[in-house]
Length: 194
Image (cartoon, rainbow, N blue to C red):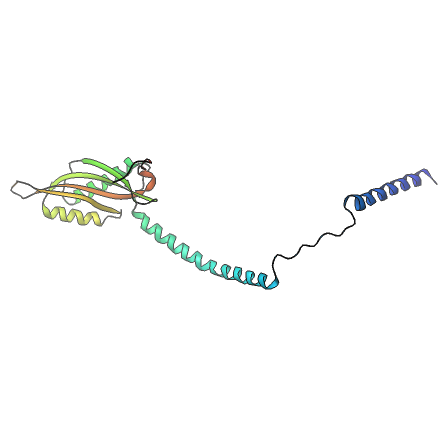
């Protein structure tokens, strides 16, 4: 035998030993264990049928979700959008003054401002203003406030009679608007709201 044949024979013998060790020493000659099925064929078919029914309802649910999302967007267009509560109150005051001027009323400035939580998603900011006007102007002013695209409401109104010849009345009016909840102050734990 030549030297190359001896090397080839040694390499083959080494590979044979490694194969035998791996096969019988590490892996063993036992066949892999079989696992029992977790459910019977009728149970699997029933589960498959249930999953098919659920998948069939997905397009309908997506349609309902899209319709509800569009309706929510349309309703939320009236919410005052601002970065801070003060900016929201300034917007509310600006809208109130514009409506008042359109009805010939001069607002004497903002007296008070309040905020409160309405729901976990929405809050309310309000401003209180004072002015003097005729009763017809007040009625027209309140109607014009209701026609605004923002979600506005009169929160409190106080009317006092005047003593001038034109029979003007003195009005103190709180106007409220809906805002995102993040703008209103949250109450601290342990304090009660009235």
